[in-house]
Every structure is written in C-alpha cells, then in structure tokens.
Image (cartoon, rainbow, N blue to C red; front, side):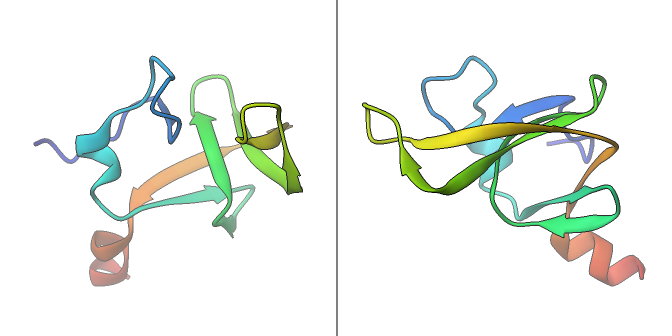
Length: 84
C-alpha cells in the first residue's frame, strides 16, 4: 500500500469514502494545527472535518456530527513520530 492517504476518508462503513485497509493503519488528523481524536470524516481538498457532537446519537445509533472548516492534515502516526 502506498504512503499516500486519501483526500477524503470516513469511519462509517456505510459511507462510500470508507476504506478498512487505510483505517487499519494508525491515522491521525491535525485540524488547524491541533490533534483531533474524534474525527468521523475528513476532506483535505475541501478543508473540513466532521467531529462527534458530544454524546448525541442519531436515530440509527451513530454519533451526531458537526462540520468544522479549516486546514486538514492527515498523517500516519508511527511515521510522524519517527520523522519528528
């Protein structure tokens, strides 16, 4: 597998942007320079992340999300620590 992460990725298996093989790697997300651990979906080219909104759930039991806009930097955690 290449070291290039996708432009858009989701943790929801029902999403067309879900990729189990990529998610099996330890992916980290920096949003506006801050590490985010509750990201449900991201898009680098459009500059947004969807994060869980507290403990709220939708009618299907999935977390409710809010969209935040700003610079998104996905990376592989093990590689980022080895480089820096």
